[in-house]
Amino acid sequence: MVVFDKPHSLIDVPLHYCPGCTHGIVHRLVAEAIDELGIEGKAIGIAPVGCSVMAYDYFNCDMIEAAHGRAPAVATGVKRANPENIVFTYQGDGDLASIGTAETVHAAARNENITIIFINNAIYGMTGGQMAPTSLPGQVTQTSPYGRDTSLCGWPVKICEMLSQLDGPEYLERVTVNNVANVRKAKKAIKKAFQNQVEGKGFSLIEVLSACPTNWGMTPREALKWIDDNMIPYYPLGVYKDRSAAKEAAE
Amino acid sequence: MAEKVLMKGNEAIAEAAIIAGCRHYFGYPITPQTEIAAYMAKRMPKIGGVFLQAESEIAAINMVYGCSSAGKRVMTSSSSPGISLKQEGISYLAGSDLPCLIVNAQRGGPGLGGIQPSQSDYFQATKGGGHGDYHLIVLAPASVQEMAELTIKGFELADKYCMPVMLLADGTTGQMMEPVTFDFDVKPAPEKPWATTGTKMQREHNIVNSLYLQPEKLEVTNLERYKKYETVKENEAMWEEFMTEDADVVVAAFGIAARVSQNAVIEARKQGIKAGLIRPITLWPFPETPFKKAAEHAKAFISVELSMGQMIEDVKLSVSCTKPVYFCGRVGGMIPSPAEVLSAIKKADGGDR
Image (cartoon, rainbow over all chains, first blue to last red; front, top):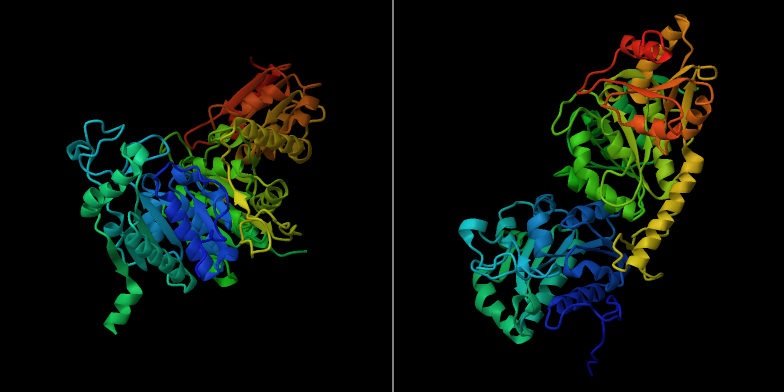
């Protein structure tokens, strides 16, 4: 008999996220991975600035709240201090792909032995729905009220594609959590990203296409469908880099 | 008696940091403090330490934030424009009550300024620098020996009070070579039960954080931090006095400006003017005591600085504006000569005013 239970590394408190937001699912997947690998006691999580700023109240492991965009640098400091710790960051698209782009790119270039969970929901949630670096062309937001005009504000940043051009990173995968099958794939990817760190393989980043029904102005179901119809075509799912697998295949 | 070695000020800081038990250095290249990074890059790998050249000053200070959260004695160093970039991280370190040592080998500003020595980051260092209500302990060395001593002291104070400490040096003291001894009795880092080193499933999780969305709670953290600052003010002010007992004219100067001023004071005494020097060693907390005492007999004060006049405000506050406080300084990387300071002393003494 399988009994549904809360992962130990997730604290039993109500989350502050909006109805239909997928942060809750991803929090749970991270917690399941931590539990299954038995690393809660040595895990250190770095919370970003954005909707998941209070992730430190939800994960049972030691937590640090970082300045906006600086989580990979903070994680680097922690990991270099105590390499036996398992260090992960949990960041949104504004945090990771806009204000913290440099920290992201250089942590990847160094192949810093950390795990990054990157929530891409194509919008700034916490501040009330502004255009994100990952907002789609034509996407209406508070700061692109006529739709994202690429001639004025440029094109979305494709993090997995961009980082895959670097020699540094070990593992890059884009997943989503908009249906059960995708949740299972996301779980596998997140667990692998932690496992890589346990094995000392280096930098792993999992980009999770996520829903923000509140700021997208949709019902939760519409939002999940919007991921299928609009986000996945622009941000194709899949593994963008797996150095160990590529090495094995070559041998 | 320990051996004397001839060393650059910046190198003395690096060596002293290692003696203090610092095994983690994060930085970004900038003149005129590069010797610190170069020294660390050479030494750290040989003693099991970490030297990491960050992608930016911003990243470097946030690596310091992470490393300090993990309980280590950690430092970064930079010069004025780089220190401006670090201000966000410094505010977070202060807001999360994390210890660390930050070295600023000041150069002329504002903007990209120049690469010659300056003291024009006094306000930034002593009044906060980043956003929010906070202070750093600010130490101002005036010799290579003191660069070493105050580095050790800086780590000890940071750990004692759980707050960032800034070593406010300048391009001259960093670059000049003097004999230095490293004969130190270092207080080891205390236990840090708050550090994020992993729960080992044996305790509640630790959180390093500066976010408090409830104003009542945020106010309490500020009030408690300021109680700590009061203790620091009561216990940690440091200064040196030179011929102040009977002085009519008291010069206030720190760092390299104090060395120039001391020569001017000696010359003034030779010429029959009762001049003296107060050299603040801590700029925050500012040593008010010697100024209050000197104000009982001095007729005037002069603040000698490599700036347009920043410390002068603290001198005025210390003497409660009971005596005139004049200013003498050069900027842009220029250093006042003893003759310039002497001339200011004579003016203040009433000679040719």
